[in-house]
Amino acid sequence: MADPFDIVIFGGCGDLALRKLVPALYRAFREEKFPSGSRVFAACHNPGDAADYLAKVAPALQEHLAADEFCPEAWDQFKELLFPLVLDVSVADEQWQSLSALLNSEPEKVRVFYLAIPPTIFGVCCQHLAQVDLVTANSRVVVEKPLGYDAVSADTINTEIARVFDESCIYRIDHYLGKETVQNLFALRFTNLIFEQLWDAKSIDHVQISISETVGLEGRAGFYNEAGALRDMVQNHLLQLLCLVAMESPNKVNFKSIRAEKLKVLEALRPMSGEDVNKHTVRGQYVPGSYSGELVPGYIEELGSPDSTTETFVALRVYIDNWRWARTPFYLRTGKRMKKRCAEIVIQFKDVSHRVYDDSAGPLAPNRLIIRLQPDEFIQLTLMSKNLERLDMQLQPATLNLNFSDTYSHFRSDAYKRLILDAATANQSLFIRRDEVEQAWAWIDPIIEAWHNSKSTPHLYRAGTWGPDESDELLKEDGRHWFNSGEGLEQE
Ligand code: BG6
Image (cartoon, rainbow, N blue to C red; front, side):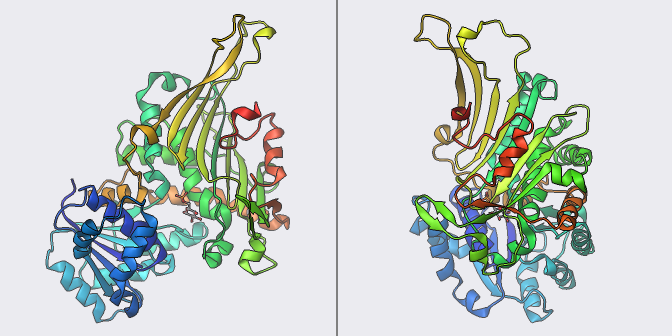
Protein backbone atom coordinates (compact mmCIF):
# COMPACT_ATOMS: atom_id res chain seq x y z
CA MET A 1 0.00 0.00 0.00
CA ALA A 2 1.21 3.52 -0.86
CA ASP A 3 1.91 6.12 1.82
CA PRO A 4 -0.92 8.65 2.24
CA PHE A 5 -0.88 11.17 -0.58
CA ASP A 6 -2.69 14.27 -1.76
CA ILE A 7 -3.84 14.37 -5.34
CA VAL A 8 -4.83 17.63 -6.98
CA ILE A 9 -6.82 17.23 -10.18
CA PHE A 10 -6.59 20.35 -12.35
CA GLY A 11 -9.63 20.18 -14.60
CA GLY A 12 -11.40 18.58 -11.64
CA CYS A 13 -14.84 18.99 -13.13
CA GLY A 14 -13.88 18.11 -16.69
CA ASP A 15 -14.89 15.09 -18.69
CA LEU A 16 -11.76 13.08 -17.91
CA ALA A 17 -12.02 13.72 -14.18
CA LEU A 18 -15.68 12.77 -13.95
CA ARG A 19 -15.52 9.85 -16.36
CA LYS A 20 -12.23 8.26 -15.39
CA LEU A 21 -10.19 9.83 -12.60
CA VAL A 22 -12.67 10.19 -9.75
CA PRO A 23 -14.27 6.77 -10.50
CA ALA A 24 -10.75 5.27 -10.45
CA LEU A 25 -10.03 6.86 -7.07
CA TYR A 26 -13.37 5.68 -5.71
CA ARG A 27 -12.56 2.13 -6.88
CA ALA A 28 -9.19 2.31 -5.16
CA PHE A 29 -10.97 3.50 -2.03
CA ARG A 30 -13.48 0.64 -2.10
CA GLU A 31 -10.76 -1.91 -2.70
CA GLU A 32 -8.85 -0.51 0.28
CA LYS A 33 -5.97 0.56 -1.94
CA PHE A 34 -6.44 4.23 -1.18
CA PRO A 35 -4.20 4.89 1.82
CA SER A 36 -5.92 6.30 4.86
CA GLY A 37 -5.10 10.00 5.26
CA SER A 38 -5.07 10.66 1.50
CA ARG A 39 -7.06 13.55 0.06
CA VAL A 40 -8.42 14.48 -3.37
CA PHE A 41 -8.53 18.15 -4.34
CA ALA A 42 -10.59 18.94 -7.43
CA ALA A 43 -9.55 22.28 -8.90
CA CYS A 44 -12.51 23.65 -10.89
CA HIS A 45 -12.40 26.62 -13.20
CA ASN A 46 -16.03 27.66 -12.61
CA PRO A 47 -17.16 28.60 -9.10
CA GLY A 48 -20.54 26.96 -9.86
CA ASP A 49 -18.86 23.61 -10.55
CA ALA A 50 -16.97 23.72 -7.28
CA ALA A 51 -20.12 24.60 -5.31
CA ASP A 52 -22.05 21.70 -6.86
CA TYR A 53 -19.16 19.31 -7.02
CA LEU A 54 -20.44 16.46 -4.91
CA ALA A 55 -23.83 16.66 -6.61
CA LYS A 56 -22.02 16.23 -9.94
CA VAL A 57 -19.70 13.44 -8.87
CA ALA A 58 -22.32 11.09 -7.41
CA PRO A 59 -24.25 10.64 -10.70
CA ALA A 60 -20.97 10.46 -12.62
CA LEU A 61 -19.86 7.56 -10.43
CA GLN A 62 -23.18 5.83 -10.92
CA GLU A 63 -22.91 6.29 -14.66
CA HIS A 64 -19.31 5.23 -15.12
CA LEU A 65 -18.98 2.42 -12.60
CA ALA A 66 -20.60 -0.99 -12.96
CA ALA A 67 -24.06 -1.28 -11.37
CA ASP A 68 -22.84 -3.16 -8.29
CA GLU A 69 -19.88 -0.88 -7.62
CA PHE A 70 -21.61 2.24 -6.37
CA CYS A 71 -22.56 1.85 -2.75
CA PRO A 72 -24.19 4.77 -0.87
CA GLU A 73 -22.34 3.99 2.39
CA ALA A 74 -18.96 3.89 0.65
CA TRP A 75 -19.82 7.09 -1.19
CA ASP A 76 -20.63 8.80 2.13
CA GLN A 77 -17.16 7.91 3.38
CA PHE A 78 -15.36 8.68 0.12
CA LYS A 79 -16.89 12.14 -0.27
CA GLU A 80 -15.29 13.13 3.04
CA LEU A 81 -11.95 12.90 1.21
CA LEU A 82 -13.02 15.03 -1.76
CA PHE A 83 -12.28 18.75 -1.61
CA PRO A 84 -13.50 20.90 -4.51
CA LEU A 85 -11.92 24.30 -4.90
CA VAL A 86 -12.11 27.16 -7.37
CA LEU A 87 -8.97 27.86 -9.31
CA ASP A 88 -8.26 29.41 -12.67
CA VAL A 89 -5.06 27.65 -13.69
CA SER A 90 -3.88 30.53 -15.89
CA VAL A 91 -4.29 33.32 -13.34
CA ALA A 92 -1.84 33.87 -10.49
CA ASP A 93 -4.33 34.93 -7.84
CA GLU A 94 -4.92 34.22 -4.17
CA GLN A 95 -6.58 30.88 -4.97
CA TRP A 96 -3.11 29.43 -5.47
CA GLN A 97 -2.13 30.62 -2.00
CA SER A 98 -5.18 28.85 -0.58
CA LEU A 99 -4.16 25.64 -2.32
CA SER A 100 -0.66 26.08 -1.00
CA ALA A 101 -1.92 26.55 2.56
CA LEU A 102 -4.04 23.40 2.30
CA LEU A 103 -1.21 21.22 1.04
CA ASN A 104 1.68 22.74 2.92
CA SER A 105 0.00 21.92 6.21
CA GLU A 106 1.59 18.50 5.56
CA PRO A 107 4.86 19.40 3.85
CA GLU A 108 6.39 15.90 3.68
CA LYS A 109 3.35 14.23 2.18
CA VAL A 110 3.48 12.83 -1.36
CA ARG A 111 1.70 15.11 -3.84
CA VAL A 112 0.35 14.11 -7.20
CA PHE A 113 -0.61 16.98 -9.49
CA TYR A 114 -2.82 15.61 -12.24
CA LEU A 115 -3.05 17.97 -15.22
CA ALA A 116 -6.38 17.05 -16.82
CA ILE A 117 -6.31 20.39 -18.67
CA PRO A 118 -5.31 21.46 -22.19
CA PRO A 119 -1.55 21.08 -22.79
CA THR A 120 -1.33 24.74 -23.76
CA ILE A 121 -1.64 25.58 -20.06
CA PHE A 122 0.58 22.81 -18.62
CA GLY A 123 3.50 25.25 -18.50
CA VAL A 124 1.70 28.04 -16.66
CA CYS A 125 0.16 25.55 -14.23
CA CYS A 126 3.62 24.19 -13.34
CA GLN A 127 4.99 27.71 -12.89
CA HIS A 128 2.21 28.65 -10.51
CA LEU A 129 2.79 25.49 -8.50
CA ALA A 130 6.43 26.46 -8.13
CA GLN A 131 5.63 30.09 -7.27
CA VAL A 132 3.49 29.10 -4.30
CA ASP A 133 6.05 26.57 -3.01
CA LEU A 134 4.03 23.52 -3.85
CA VAL A 135 6.80 21.65 -5.62
CA THR A 136 8.69 19.53 -3.11
CA ALA A 137 10.95 16.49 -3.40
CA ASN A 138 7.82 14.37 -2.97
CA SER A 139 5.81 16.04 -5.73
CA ARG A 140 4.93 14.35 -9.01
CA VAL A 141 3.14 15.72 -12.02
CA VAL A 142 0.95 13.52 -14.20
CA VAL A 143 0.31 14.79 -17.72
CA GLU A 144 -2.33 13.60 -20.11
CA LYS A 145 -2.08 13.37 -23.85
CA PRO A 146 -2.11 14.97 -26.35
CA LEU A 147 1.51 15.82 -25.68
CA GLY A 148 1.75 18.11 -28.64
CA TYR A 149 0.59 18.19 -32.18
CA ASP A 150 3.96 17.41 -33.70
CA ALA A 151 7.60 17.12 -32.60
CA VAL A 152 8.05 20.88 -32.21
CA SER A 153 4.96 21.50 -30.09
CA ALA A 154 5.71 18.41 -27.98
CA ASP A 155 9.18 19.76 -27.32
CA THR A 156 7.74 23.11 -26.23
CA ILE A 157 5.35 21.45 -23.78
CA ASN A 158 8.01 19.13 -22.39
CA THR A 159 10.45 22.02 -21.98
CA GLU A 160 7.89 24.07 -20.07
CA ILE A 161 7.17 21.24 -17.66
CA ALA A 162 10.89 20.54 -17.28
CA ARG A 163 11.49 24.11 -16.07
CA VAL A 164 9.73 23.11 -12.88
CA PHE A 165 9.83 19.33 -12.58
CA ASP A 166 12.75 16.97 -12.96
CA GLU A 167 12.18 14.12 -15.48
CA SER A 168 12.07 11.68 -12.55
CA CYS A 169 8.95 13.47 -11.27
CA ILE A 170 7.11 13.69 -14.62
CA TYR A 171 4.53 10.98 -15.34
CA ARG A 172 3.36 11.07 -18.96
CA ILE A 173 0.33 8.87 -19.00
CA ASP A 174 -0.75 6.50 -21.76
CA HIS A 175 -3.74 4.74 -20.26
CA TYR A 176 -3.31 1.77 -22.58
CA LEU A 177 -0.20 0.81 -20.61
CA GLY A 178 -2.32 0.61 -17.47
CA LYS A 179 -4.60 -2.07 -18.91
CA GLU A 180 -3.99 -5.33 -17.04
CA THR A 181 -3.68 -7.52 -20.14
CA VAL A 182 -0.94 -5.27 -21.45
CA GLN A 183 1.07 -6.13 -18.38
CA ASN A 184 0.13 -9.73 -18.89
CA LEU A 185 1.78 -9.50 -22.28
CA PHE A 186 4.97 -8.80 -20.37
CA ALA A 187 4.43 -11.76 -18.09
CA LEU A 188 3.66 -13.95 -21.09
CA ARG A 189 6.72 -12.89 -23.05
CA PHE A 190 9.29 -12.82 -20.31
CA THR A 191 8.38 -15.78 -18.11
CA ASN A 192 7.56 -18.46 -20.70
CA LEU A 193 10.35 -20.27 -22.45
CA ILE A 194 8.15 -21.40 -25.34
CA PHE A 195 7.49 -17.82 -26.37
CA GLU A 196 11.00 -16.59 -25.71
CA GLN A 197 12.30 -19.08 -28.26
CA LEU A 198 9.75 -18.21 -30.93
CA TRP A 199 9.44 -14.44 -30.62
CA ASP A 200 11.19 -13.24 -33.76
CA ALA A 201 11.20 -13.02 -37.53
CA LYS A 202 12.26 -16.67 -37.87
CA SER A 203 8.98 -17.92 -36.34
CA ILE A 204 6.52 -15.05 -36.63
CA ASP A 205 4.90 -14.28 -39.96
CA HIS A 206 3.41 -10.95 -38.97
CA VAL A 207 1.77 -9.03 -36.13
CA GLN A 208 -1.55 -7.14 -36.16
CA ILE A 209 -2.46 -4.52 -33.58
CA SER A 210 -6.00 -3.15 -33.88
CA ILE A 211 -7.97 -0.73 -31.75
CA SER A 212 -11.45 -0.38 -33.19
CA GLU A 213 -14.01 1.90 -31.60
CA THR A 214 -17.72 2.20 -32.22
CA VAL A 215 -18.03 5.73 -30.85
CA GLY A 216 -17.79 8.86 -32.99
CA LEU A 217 -16.79 12.32 -31.88
CA GLU A 218 -18.25 12.20 -28.36
CA GLY A 219 -18.39 15.96 -27.98
CA ARG A 220 -14.66 16.37 -28.76
CA ALA A 221 -15.12 17.70 -32.30
CA GLY A 222 -12.72 20.64 -31.93
CA PHE A 223 -9.85 18.56 -30.62
CA TYR A 224 -10.42 15.54 -32.84
CA ASN A 225 -10.78 17.40 -36.09
CA GLU A 226 -7.38 19.01 -35.48
CA ALA A 227 -5.78 15.76 -34.41
CA GLY A 228 -7.18 12.83 -36.44
CA ALA A 229 -6.64 9.15 -35.77
CA LEU A 230 -2.88 9.11 -36.40
CA ARG A 231 -2.11 11.70 -33.73
CA ASP A 232 -4.91 10.68 -31.38
CA MET A 233 -4.28 6.92 -31.30
CA VAL A 234 -1.21 5.81 -33.28
CA GLN A 235 1.44 8.24 -32.02
CA ASN A 236 0.79 7.02 -28.48
CA HIS A 237 -1.37 3.94 -27.80
CA LEU A 238 -0.59 1.87 -30.90
CA LEU A 239 3.12 2.64 -30.93
CA GLN A 240 3.35 1.85 -27.24
CA LEU A 241 1.66 -1.52 -27.76
CA LEU A 242 3.98 -2.17 -30.68
CA CYS A 243 6.95 -1.43 -28.42
CA LEU A 244 5.78 -3.93 -25.84
CA VAL A 245 5.36 -6.66 -28.45
CA ALA A 246 8.66 -5.96 -30.18
CA MET A 247 11.08 -4.89 -27.43
CA GLU A 248 13.98 -6.98 -26.20
CA SER A 249 13.80 -8.45 -22.74
CA PRO A 250 14.57 -5.77 -20.13
CA ASN A 251 17.31 -6.74 -17.68
CA LYS A 252 14.80 -6.22 -14.91
CA VAL A 253 11.17 -5.20 -14.94
CA ASN A 254 11.86 -1.69 -13.75
CA PHE A 255 11.27 1.72 -15.24
CA LYS A 256 14.84 2.25 -16.45
CA SER A 257 15.17 -1.00 -18.37
CA ILE A 258 11.65 -1.04 -19.80
CA ARG A 259 11.81 2.49 -21.12
CA ALA A 260 15.29 2.02 -22.54
CA GLU A 261 14.12 -1.05 -24.49
CA LYS A 262 10.97 0.65 -25.77
CA LEU A 263 13.02 3.56 -27.05
CA LYS A 264 15.21 1.18 -29.07
CA VAL A 265 12.12 -0.12 -30.87
CA LEU A 266 10.94 3.39 -31.69
CA GLU A 267 14.40 4.21 -33.02
CA ALA A 268 14.32 1.11 -35.22
CA LEU A 269 10.98 1.92 -36.88
CA ARG A 270 11.62 2.22 -40.58
CA PRO A 271 10.98 5.87 -41.47
CA MET A 272 8.29 6.58 -44.04
CA SER A 273 8.06 9.59 -46.24
CA GLY A 274 6.86 10.56 -49.70
CA GLU A 275 5.90 7.56 -51.85
CA ASP A 276 6.42 5.05 -48.98
CA VAL A 277 3.57 6.71 -47.16
CA ASN A 278 1.19 6.11 -50.07
CA LYS A 279 2.33 2.54 -50.25
CA HIS A 280 2.18 1.66 -46.56
CA THR A 281 -0.68 3.72 -45.11
CA VAL A 282 -4.43 4.01 -45.64
CA ARG A 283 -6.53 6.87 -44.31
CA GLY A 284 -10.29 6.68 -43.94
CA GLN A 285 -13.23 8.82 -42.90
CA TYR A 286 -16.66 7.43 -42.01
CA VAL A 287 -19.86 8.26 -43.86
CA PRO A 288 -23.37 7.52 -42.55
CA GLY A 289 -24.04 3.88 -41.79
CA SER A 290 -25.60 1.75 -39.12
CA TYR A 291 -24.48 0.32 -35.84
CA SER A 292 -26.54 -2.29 -33.97
CA GLY A 293 -29.47 -1.62 -36.27
CA GLU A 294 -29.42 2.14 -35.63
CA LEU A 295 -28.55 4.69 -38.28
CA VAL A 296 -25.51 6.76 -37.37
CA PRO A 297 -24.34 9.98 -39.03
CA GLY A 298 -21.13 10.35 -40.98
CA TYR A 299 -18.12 12.28 -39.67
CA ILE A 300 -18.92 15.35 -41.73
CA GLU A 301 -22.50 15.44 -40.42
CA GLU A 302 -21.37 14.92 -36.82
CA LEU A 303 -18.76 17.62 -37.18
CA GLY A 304 -21.02 20.04 -39.03
CA SER A 305 -18.24 21.04 -41.40
CA PRO A 306 -18.34 19.73 -45.00
CA ASP A 307 -14.68 20.29 -45.89
CA SER A 308 -12.87 18.31 -43.24
CA THR A 309 -10.31 15.81 -44.51
CA THR A 310 -9.40 14.59 -41.04
CA GLU A 311 -8.85 10.85 -40.91
CA THR A 312 -11.05 8.87 -38.51
CA PHE A 313 -9.38 5.61 -39.53
CA VAL A 314 -5.82 4.66 -40.29
CA ALA A 315 -4.10 1.42 -41.23
CA LEU A 316 -0.34 1.09 -41.57
CA ARG A 317 2.25 -1.46 -42.59
CA VAL A 318 5.25 -0.92 -40.36
CA TYR A 319 8.71 -2.48 -40.31
CA ILE A 320 11.17 -2.58 -37.46
CA ASP A 321 14.68 -2.61 -38.84
CA ASN A 322 16.57 -4.67 -36.33
CA TRP A 323 17.96 -8.17 -36.04
CA ARG A 324 14.89 -9.65 -34.34
CA TRP A 325 12.21 -8.30 -36.66
CA ALA A 326 13.86 -7.86 -40.04
CA ARG A 327 11.23 -7.97 -42.83
CA THR A 328 8.35 -8.90 -40.45
CA PRO A 329 5.38 -6.62 -41.08
CA PHE A 330 3.49 -5.10 -38.17
CA TYR A 331 0.04 -4.03 -39.31
CA LEU A 332 -1.55 -1.31 -37.17
CA ARG A 333 -5.15 -0.22 -37.48
CA THR A 334 -7.50 2.04 -35.58
CA GLY A 335 -10.74 3.83 -36.31
CA LYS A 336 -13.89 5.42 -34.97
CA ARG A 337 -17.40 4.12 -35.75
CA MET A 338 -16.18 0.69 -36.69
CA LYS A 339 -18.11 -2.54 -36.52
CA LYS A 340 -17.05 -3.60 -33.01
CA ARG A 341 -15.24 -2.10 -30.05
CA CYS A 342 -12.13 -4.15 -29.60
CA ALA A 343 -8.44 -3.79 -28.85
CA GLU A 344 -6.44 -6.81 -29.85
CA ILE A 345 -2.92 -7.94 -30.67
CA VAL A 346 -2.60 -10.91 -33.00
CA ILE A 347 0.71 -12.72 -33.41
CA GLN A 348 0.56 -14.91 -36.49
CA PHE A 349 3.24 -17.60 -36.53
CA LYS A 350 4.70 -19.12 -39.69
CA ASP A 351 3.65 -22.37 -41.35
CA VAL A 352 5.36 -25.52 -40.16
CA SER A 353 8.45 -26.20 -42.22
CA HIS A 354 7.26 -29.56 -43.62
CA ARG A 355 3.80 -31.08 -43.93
CA VAL A 356 3.70 -34.70 -42.74
CA TYR A 357 0.00 -35.42 -43.43
CA ASP A 358 -1.43 -35.86 -46.92
CA ASP A 359 -4.00 -33.46 -48.25
CA SER A 360 -6.96 -35.57 -47.11
CA ALA A 361 -6.25 -34.52 -43.49
CA GLY A 362 -7.39 -31.01 -44.37
CA PRO A 363 -5.64 -27.66 -44.39
CA LEU A 364 -3.12 -26.60 -41.76
CA ALA A 365 -3.60 -23.25 -40.06
CA PRO A 366 -0.47 -21.72 -38.56
CA ASN A 367 -0.45 -21.05 -34.80
CA ARG A 368 -1.87 -17.77 -33.72
CA LEU A 369 -1.68 -15.95 -30.41
CA ILE A 370 -4.45 -13.46 -29.70
CA ILE A 371 -4.10 -11.00 -26.85
CA ARG A 372 -7.41 -9.23 -26.30
CA LEU A 373 -7.25 -6.07 -24.19
CA GLN A 374 -10.90 -5.08 -24.40
CA PRO A 375 -13.85 -5.27 -24.15
CA ASP A 376 -13.03 -8.59 -22.47
CA GLU A 377 -9.53 -9.68 -21.53
CA PHE A 378 -8.08 -12.97 -22.68
CA ILE A 379 -5.11 -14.64 -24.26
CA GLN A 380 -5.80 -17.39 -26.80
CA LEU A 381 -3.45 -19.68 -28.60
CA THR A 382 -4.72 -21.62 -31.60
CA LEU A 383 -3.07 -24.93 -32.30
CA MET A 384 -3.77 -27.69 -34.81
CA SER A 385 -5.27 -30.87 -33.39
CA LYS A 386 -7.13 -33.99 -34.50
CA ASN A 387 -10.90 -34.10 -34.79
CA LEU A 388 -11.65 -36.79 -32.20
CA GLU A 389 -15.03 -37.70 -33.63
CA ARG A 390 -13.59 -38.93 -36.89
CA LEU A 391 -11.87 -42.25 -37.42
CA ASP A 392 -9.76 -40.93 -40.22
CA MET A 393 -7.18 -38.22 -39.56
CA GLN A 394 -8.87 -34.87 -39.86
CA LEU A 395 -6.99 -31.87 -38.60
CA GLN A 396 -8.68 -28.83 -37.12
CA PRO A 397 -7.69 -25.74 -35.17
CA ALA A 398 -8.31 -25.84 -31.41
CA THR A 399 -7.93 -23.00 -28.96
CA LEU A 400 -6.17 -22.78 -25.63
CA ASN A 401 -7.98 -20.10 -23.73
CA LEU A 402 -6.76 -18.01 -20.80
CA ASN A 403 -9.90 -16.09 -20.01
CA PHE A 404 -9.24 -13.51 -17.31
CA SER A 405 -12.82 -12.26 -17.24
CA ASP A 406 -13.85 -15.71 -15.91
CA THR A 407 -10.90 -16.30 -13.62
CA TYR A 408 -11.11 -12.88 -12.01
CA SER A 409 -14.84 -12.36 -12.26
CA HIS A 410 -14.89 -9.81 -9.40
CA PHE A 411 -11.85 -7.93 -10.56
CA ARG A 412 -12.46 -4.68 -12.44
CA SER A 413 -9.55 -3.68 -14.57
CA ASP A 414 -9.09 0.08 -14.34
CA ALA A 415 -6.06 1.55 -16.06
CA TYR A 416 -6.39 4.94 -14.38
CA LYS A 417 -6.59 3.43 -10.90
CA ARG A 418 -3.40 1.50 -11.42
CA LEU A 419 -1.55 4.44 -13.00
CA ILE A 420 -2.56 6.98 -10.33
CA LEU A 421 -1.45 4.57 -7.61
CA ASP A 422 1.80 3.96 -9.52
CA ALA A 423 2.43 7.71 -9.61
CA ALA A 424 1.71 7.92 -5.88
CA THR A 425 4.34 5.21 -5.25
CA ALA A 426 6.85 6.78 -7.67
CA ASN A 427 6.74 3.85 -10.10
CA GLN A 428 7.43 5.23 -13.58
CA SER A 429 7.53 1.88 -15.42
CA LEU A 430 4.21 2.38 -17.21
CA PHE A 431 4.76 6.05 -18.03
CA ILE A 432 6.43 7.49 -21.10
CA ARG A 433 9.88 9.08 -21.01
CA ARG A 434 10.46 12.33 -22.84
CA ASP A 435 12.71 10.80 -25.48
CA GLU A 436 10.05 8.19 -26.30
CA VAL A 437 7.53 10.95 -27.02
CA GLU A 438 10.08 12.76 -29.18
CA GLN A 439 11.01 9.63 -31.10
CA ALA A 440 7.36 8.74 -31.73
CA TRP A 441 6.68 12.20 -33.15
CA ALA A 442 9.83 12.04 -35.26
CA TRP A 443 8.38 8.96 -36.94
CA ILE A 444 4.80 10.29 -37.22
CA ASP A 445 5.53 13.80 -38.53
CA PRO A 446 6.79 12.77 -42.01
CA ILE A 447 3.65 10.64 -42.52
CA ILE A 448 1.42 13.61 -41.83
CA GLU A 449 3.56 15.77 -44.07
CA ALA A 450 3.37 13.26 -46.93
CA TRP A 451 -0.41 13.04 -46.61
CA HIS A 452 -0.57 16.79 -46.68
CA ASN A 453 1.67 17.08 -49.73
CA SER A 454 -0.09 14.33 -51.65
CA LYS A 455 -3.30 16.41 -51.67
CA SER A 456 -5.23 13.12 -51.53
CA THR A 457 -8.22 12.75 -49.24
CA PRO A 458 -9.19 9.89 -46.93
CA HIS A 459 -11.01 6.88 -48.37
CA LEU A 460 -14.60 6.72 -47.24
CA TYR A 461 -16.05 3.86 -45.19
CA ARG A 462 -19.53 3.27 -43.93
CA ALA A 463 -20.01 3.66 -40.17
CA GLY A 464 -20.41 0.21 -38.64
CA THR A 465 -17.84 -1.52 -40.90
CA TRP A 466 -14.19 -2.50 -40.52
CA GLY A 467 -12.94 0.53 -42.44
CA PRO A 468 -12.34 1.31 -46.11
CA ASP A 469 -11.73 -1.45 -48.68
CA GLU A 470 -8.24 -0.06 -49.22
CA SER A 471 -7.34 -1.23 -45.71
CA ASP A 472 -8.14 -4.82 -46.73
CA GLU A 473 -6.14 -4.29 -49.94
CA LEU A 474 -3.11 -3.28 -47.87
CA LEU A 475 -2.94 -6.79 -46.43
CA LYS A 476 -4.15 -8.57 -49.57
CA GLU A 477 -1.11 -7.22 -51.39
CA ASP A 478 0.94 -9.31 -48.95
CA GLY A 479 -1.33 -12.38 -49.22
CA ARG A 480 -2.78 -11.73 -45.75
CA HIS A 481 -6.00 -10.46 -44.22
CA TRP A 482 -7.12 -8.71 -41.06
CA PHE A 483 -8.35 -10.82 -38.19
CA ASN A 484 -11.50 -8.97 -37.32
CA SER A 485 -12.51 -9.51 -33.74
CA GLY A 486 -14.66 -12.61 -33.41
CA GLU A 487 -14.38 -13.38 -37.11
CA GLY A 488 -10.82 -14.71 -37.18
CA LEU A 489 -11.45 -18.39 -37.68
CA GLU A 490 -14.45 -17.96 -39.95
CA GLN A 491 -12.24 -16.19 -42.43
CA GLU A 492 -9.85 -19.12 -42.86
C1 BG6 B 1 -8.04 8.30 -26.03
C2 BG6 B 1 -8.42 8.94 -27.35
O1 BG6 B 1 -6.68 8.46 -25.78
O2 BG6 B 1 -8.35 6.92 -26.07
C3 BG6 B 1 -9.88 8.71 -27.66
O3 BG6 B 1 -8.14 10.33 -27.28
C4 BG6 B 1 -10.22 7.24 -27.59
O4 BG6 B 1 -10.21 9.24 -28.94
C5 BG6 B 1 -9.72 6.63 -26.27
O5 BG6 B 1 -11.62 7.11 -27.69
C6 BG6 B 1 -9.89 5.13 -26.28
O6 BG6 B 1 -9.61 4.61 -25.01
P1 BG6 B 1 -10.28 3.26 -24.54
O7 BG6 B 1 -9.57 2.91 -23.28
O8 BG6 B 1 -11.74 3.55 -24.34
O9 BG6 B 1 -10.06 2.29 -25.64
